[in-house]
Length: 242
Image (tube, rainbow, N blue to C red; front, side):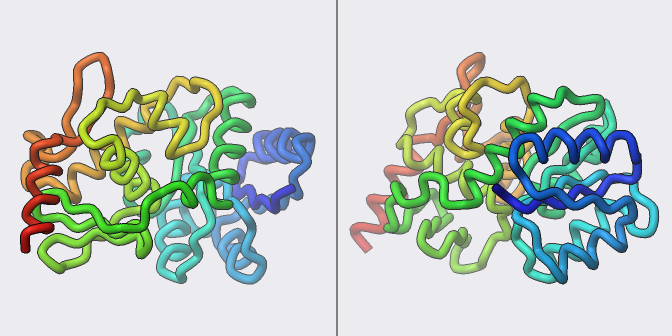
């Protein structure tokens, strides 16, 4: 059982979310105002937050920014309007872990909640090597969960870091979107989503010199993504001979 905070001002939708999440065995609290929801999250941090972006009192973007500024790291699943791609990207940049688009299916939302909860409680981190990886001028440290470029830190979200590490561990092999969703988000079944593509775009924006012509994270048409093995191996060899 997890403690879940739902911050949603649509009373009918909030009630439906609460009922379905409680049916799954979770302890659910609902707030219909962004400011009150933030106060509750600060004073009684939940295991996960389901957050609408359009809220009275304090909108979801300000909620997210304040939450992360206060070093509260619980996973956040945002609810966005259909077709508002800019809202999804902005929410992810502010620290959201995943999103669903309204209107959404209950089973999809429950699958995403379950995956985020499992991932936040240590999903497969124990199986990851702790030695740093070198990718071009990037250093990725799994133990510190940090990425630096020539010694300067880069600010990656937890999901962006896990996605980069999942690709690096494959040493140039292609990872399908479904494989990445299973490893990084913990999905046990295929959920139709552009989550991986959106996170890849944000990851490239932060680590690539030219995100439109990526050097590190390569798209393999109709297959998925991979790390350029030449860049990875070259960086490793240079590090070993230094």
